[in-house]
Image (cartoon, rainbow, N blue to C red; front, side):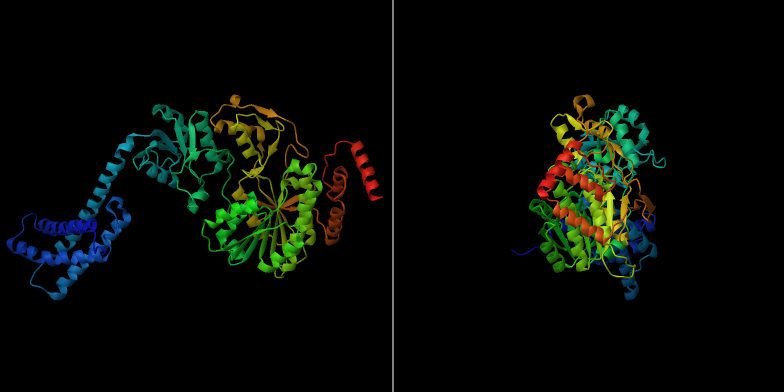
Length: 633
């Protein structure tokens, strides 16, 4: 089948513009002669009209004026009209001047004609768009649930524009604390007052829903807005996070219910993007534990800086598969390698580092579940978290890796559990392996990053509370006064990368975790945000679990910190170790795999002086020692 040279709609659009061009030309003459055109000028007008229309139509087609759709006419279309009409006006004047025809056209006509043409061509397109939108969406303006938008920034403007076509929502107005825009209108919705006026405005317009559209505002301001709406009994919704909006993963109209992460939200991290680009761009990067919460987010953040190869290591086949499915859908330029690997397997680790020769290694693989590691798995925790770290660190050193970044935890500070003590040992292993090298020297620089709980990570309290609320309760909390630090997964990953960039070798970076959160208050917030009342979901206090502390610390008793150029990173001046100490530690762990766990914990306190082991009684220790001696003999 032959393709049409011009479709029907384009033909009618062109015919419209030809008619408009004729009207504009006549209109210019009418305005020039005050609606009384002399006979000789009328004759010249009719004689010049055909060649003017032909020239203008040729220019309109050449400049692609008919590529757009009138129903979606925009400022871009107006610019195209403006450029086409001005070009046509210049061409008409040039032709008249060059050929010096007998037709004399007043100069004012050459000025008035393009002005009228722009008004008529642009006006007809926007009139058609307005009419079509009224036909399609006009009836929806009176439909939908009335809603108030909190905020009047760019996100709120985009939201109001999108909701103008929604049948579900009808924007009653906006509230914002900027006094300069109060009383103004945004796409037909008026900024009716400040956020503190929400109670009176919601009552006046009988509104039951509020959308918080302030993704880039300070998190405390967002929290205050959410809490105000919640206290008034309104259903609170919010727009996606600023990172998701900027990345294009979601649109501003994809509103959702407010979650507890919105209440615990923190300010965006300021990254040294140029430095990270230099560190990662066109280099190979390896992430161990890539299928975990922190490891997978590190992978998401790293690919933004265009590594040549990203090697994703994890012992879990399923976790790697999930990560592979997610990243492969992004159509990234970087080569992505997925390898199942136990970081304690020296042969496998050595082979991988020799094959891919990474510039940076992020070590996130670890056992992290405190109660699980406290009993029945003590040696496994030490083996995986300490020997695994040493194996990967030693292989990195031998392969000439520039930066080795260990993901540590606040539970390594004055630990009361095996997991925390094992991570403190992992820190000391990396410190012991660090050689004294200047900035200009080559060699592996070991950097450790210590932070608290991350929101929504596997095994954390928030997913557990969500599941318990969904089942109707009860929510189980270990102690009424227990507190924890929280940080979002993207923020933690970004700060890990920033610390890796800044590290010169041997430092333990401590992240600014903000203020600790009381877990009982967190549970109450989650109940309320689920649309339930606190009395509808019971909270039970079940007592502290083995190895659990009432509060976490980011620094040990004998540690001090020094500031860094980054406001959210400090360096802990902790007790260090050396290669002899590391060698003896590894020998102790390797020969202790059959030891009784109480004995292991007791001996662990020798290696980690600040560790307070959780042992049931002195009698158990005595029995453990006797059992161990019998085994040795």
